[in-house]
Image (cartoon, rainbow, N blue to C red; front, side, top):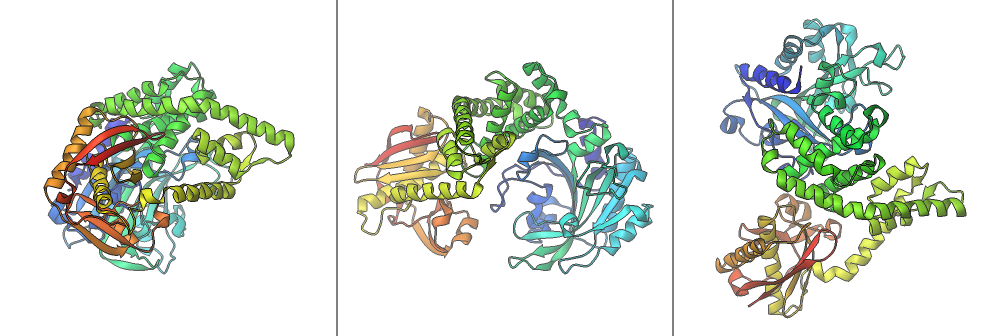
Length: 600
């Protein structure tokens, strides 16, 4: 069964059973406490928690989707048979219950069996089931055990596990969660480890593949770590799309399925090398190029913080493995086009955004390719020096930080290369060196981020207020990923540094300037509130250098336009600023632009 047929079968199956098909949400979640969408249920969290009315917004309790997901904890594991960063999650939900229309454990289990056996022709005799054996003050899932037995699953193939394997969620620190029951598929002894006790969740082999996770969401994890009952019971299920494909197509890994194999074939073509002899490099590049395309498509740009850092990290990792394969400069552009070609039928927006996606990829490739060779030479010199002068097989934190600071090598990349050479990194001293550098930088740049001080002149207060308007205007015109990287004010002008990878064109500069002047003319009141830092961030206030903020902070809002954590002070109303004019833009470092502006 090919990938398109599987998509259609899944959606039609649940649509016929009264489920509303909901499109995938973006990889940038609405939940500000997590960086990326990593599960199908994330867009439904307010409904699962009972905070929003699912009937009002979706007209029914039963929902089905195929969700784009991106997970970061296992980036270093990408290259084996099972791990991916980007993947798709097929899922169905029953949110809340009523006597006639809701379903819980019985409904979820029976529909899962129906789909697998009758729609995908999987052999029911190869199913192994796991259930929650109890823990965290929550009882054993006896009900699920009995339902599986009723549906002719052999008792010996229903295995009980604890909270690590069979209790799902929440996505963040708090939220909806519950015990889960998983369907594992036995691929046969040839995939096994030889242990007669081998079964689901074996850590030594890939014989048993987890295909479908059925979460029975009855609980909410609170801030104190305790679990309380939700006001409603929900079903939240998820199938790893690529993982199921690998079983249905009888492939050893997801990289041989029809969603990733075309990219593998393209790498073979441009490298003139064989996939079987270079599996790790091929798989890393195939996974990361697909992930990069979807991250950029959803509005993420490479940077040194948060989501942008994840994107930068996987692009740089691709470039490094491209070098191992002797791929020519520009190879990422070829692969980007291949990903878009393969996925545009399912996600047509990729084709519409192809020029922008290519621009971001090409920019980042050019920038890092220039420093990679120098950095690798420096790395070799470092190892040579260590080997010549001592017997240690570790790289000190200061040495690793120098590679990061001068050559843009993320710690993870240095660790990966070091491991290949038989060396370890002292991560603790790396973080100490990084912290020391940050403290020095902050000491020299305190006024850039901390406002203008208590003895501020009226002109400085006006210019400082203008930086807030400028910041939001840049985010509105360019991208919500734009972030303040520094600012400086004197008696005549403001200087504002922000994260962005390319020069603004004249139209963009004019649009930014016009937005600021429009807000000035609207005579908006500047409002100050005192609140806890965590509450400020959750309310949508922008904040930077989070570790230096006190527990209680000041939040300045300019109507509904701008909201930032800031020490102040500011003027009372925007009309006091007069007229705003940009006088210069320039580069202020890698991926950092600088604008200078005046008030007239």
